[in-house]
Length: 140
Image (cartoon, rainbow, N blue to C red):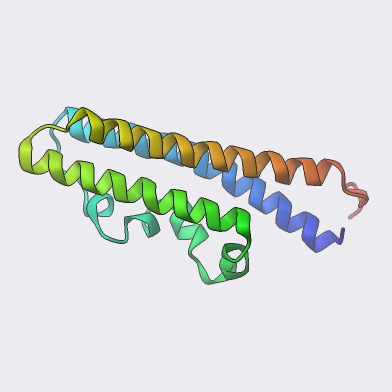
């Protein structure tokens, strides 16, 4: 494996770690907005909400066009879009009715869990590849 590939894998792992942390914060804020009946920001209910979170800003950037073509990243893209679509739908219903149906809430939680699970799996695969590379990572 070439040094640039190793560096790219390291970047992917770092971004996934950061995105996992950011999605925990995003989820906590979303629950706070709903429970405390605070106004939902447009970034949550926008049709392009999947592009507004930190992960989306990185993932949908031009520099990652090649990554989005890979099957493992297409799966993450699908799950990420679904998570934000479920969130948007649930939040719009909540905004209109002042409550959220249990099925909507379950779909919302499931989509978050599935997205995180796939990110964790991708991170593990990238780390495994890094650990089994023939490149001496201590070389400058």
